Image 1 (cartoon, rainbow, N blue to C red):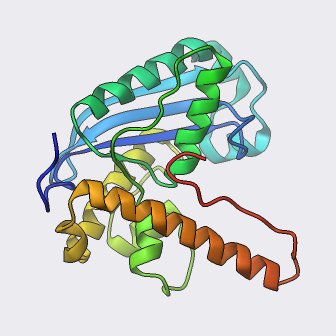
Image 2: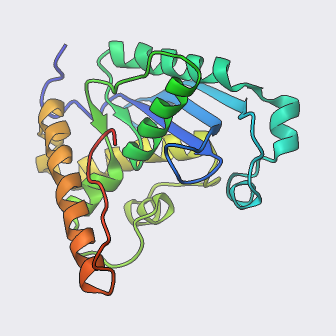
Length: 232
């Protein structure tokens, strides 16, 4: 069912993973969150996972999200089961025509696809609509200086983030940033969700092309990067 214009930010599904590293094709899920927030950013539903990824969690990753290999093995559920449950939960919220918010969505959704293939699950091919506050913010406020991390976005848009790199806190904060962007840019709020999704596909490609060009002009002539979105 198509959302009416200006309604896309009212009720949002939110999604985040914390993982063993940054490579989407080799890294594993450690924690995950899928939830739903209402028009005021209030948490309506949430489900969280602590996962035993079946591999050592590098110290560098533990320093970011706080989960050690020992804790994951002791308290986490098996990765194959967790990945299946995460995919099923995402499918359920997508079936309700809720846009799924993920900050830097191409990372989380692509990594989840590789995890699905690793454990023999049917991959989550992506919901009908994705809202990526990172891609949108870089498009609507292109020349703002400073970092574009979730923490920085929260500071800029006045969203509270008390536990950065906790999957639940990050997912909810990303959803609230998306809602704050919609309030700050009425032309986006008035955009139908299908159109917003299509714009993000173009914006992500343009942003990657611009970044690749900058890297090549600054001493890395062979540098390449992908702007595919929301799956790489």
